[in-house]
Length: 235
Ligand SMILES: [Zn+2]
Ligand SMILES: [Zn+2]
Image (cartoon, rainbow, N blue to C red; front, side, top):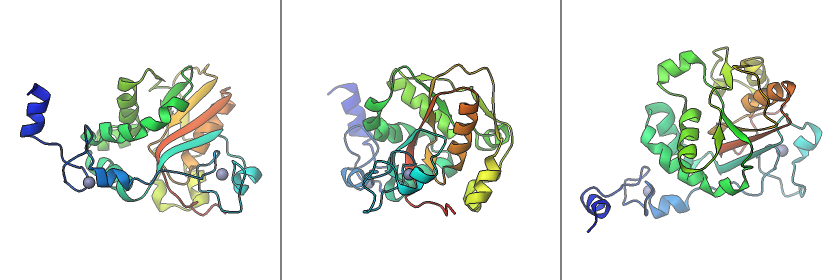
């Protein structure tokens, strides 16, 4: 028996969600893995579900009001198992969840342009002091350890400590993040991949995309682990 197998024998991996025996190599069991709600039949632009009447790649809303980003790819809907895992990381700093969460993101990596750069959605310095880390930063680090992606962790800074978006309506979310980001250094990237581990109303990624395009970036693609399924009151 090798060392790794012996450690597995002594300390078997448990599922992070239900504590049953975990599936080969990741901290989820086969049942919880099967229950992961993959995003499917969604708008390539905003990532929300297409209605049965919408047959184009963009939803009717995006055809009328195109967002500043060129596309949004989310791996899972923000519900059930992904929501439990992400909430555990968000509220109790369970940093050891990150490798499992990034494993779940792997299926999307072949779509990434190798010449583009990844940047994390930044947190304000006060929020980082309070929580101890920026989750988007940690997710990207985990991804970059496994794949040859180019990351620029310090391109953007959140210059205003904005209110938590969860308490606000759509219009309040938009004004809450307006002019909340600045470049730390000149940006000559043509294509930027913006990483935000959870996208809800998309107001934050919309504002950053608007700002980056005004700074000369040609394309901004948003990548997320989980996307809320319902538009948070777009009107
Ligand atoms: Zn489980
Ligand atoms: Zn859309």
